[in-house]
Length: 336
Image (tube, rainbow, N blue to C red; front, side, top):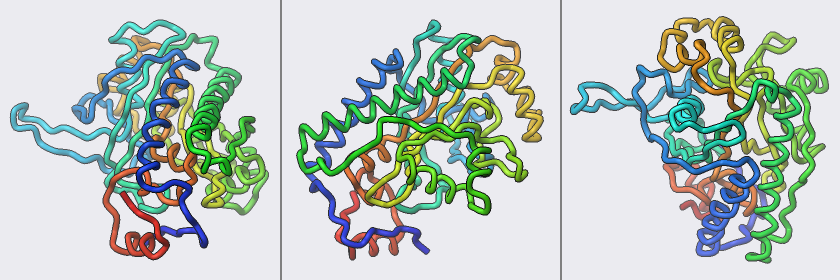
C-alpha cells in the first residue's frame, strides 16, 4: 500500500520546465556556498566498492546492498549506500590537511527503502568530509558546522527567489535549535521518534537532533546508525519544517566521526567486533586515518524543500508503484 499523501489543494509553484531550470541552479549555487563555508574541494567518487574492504555504509544494519558479479575480476561488487567511510580513506590518500575537506556527488541505490513522499530507491546527495583536530571533536564545533550549512541553504533560497518570484512564499528559519535525542525523549513522553521530530520541528522550524545511534533511557535509540563512522555522542540529524507537507523533513545526517576509542566502544555495543579485522577499521584503530567531521546532504530533498514540492518524484527520476502513480496523477502531480 502506498504511503504517498498529496496535501489537499496542492499546486506546484513552478511548471516542469522551470522546475528543471531551478534544480540546476540549486545544485550549482548550493555546492558553491557549501564549499566556501566548509573549505571543501570536489572530488570524483565511486558508484560501487569491493565488499571485502569494509568501505560500504551498513546504514542501520538491515538494508541489503545491490550486489553484482564482475567476471573480469572474479569477484563481486556492491553499489554504495553512502560514502561515509570511503571519504575518510580518500582524505588520507589525497593528503588533505586540517581545515580542508572534500565533497562529491553521491548516487546510490537503496533497494529496501520504503517509498513515500520523501523516500525513493534512488539516493542522490552531496557527501562531504573534512579533516579536523582532536580539540575540535566537540559539540560546539559540530553546532558551528551545522549553522554554516543552514546559512548556505538559506542563502541558496534567497538567490533562487530572485530568479523565480513564484517562490516568494517559501520561507526557512536561519536559526538552528539544538536538542539531544534524550532531551526530546524526555520532552515528548509517549511519542514515537518520528512524532518527536515533527513536534520539535513544528515548534522551532530548523532543528538539529544530537546523539543518534546509542540507546536512550527507554532502552531504544532515536534511530539506527552504523557503529563505524559517526561518533554516536557527537552526531545528529538536521531537519526543517516543511510547510508544503506540514511535517519535518530530514535534510542531512552528519557528525564528528569515530576515533579509535569510539569505534571500539560502538562495535562492542552493536555486537559486531569482527569488523575490526576489515582494512578500513584496522587503519582507524591504528590511528592511520585523519580525524574528521562529515555527512550527507540530500540533493532531491533540498530541491523539494526550496521549490515547495510535495513528492520527491517531482525533482528526481525513479521507479514508483502503480498506486503512487495514480495518487499523484489524481492530484495533478507530475512525476519525472
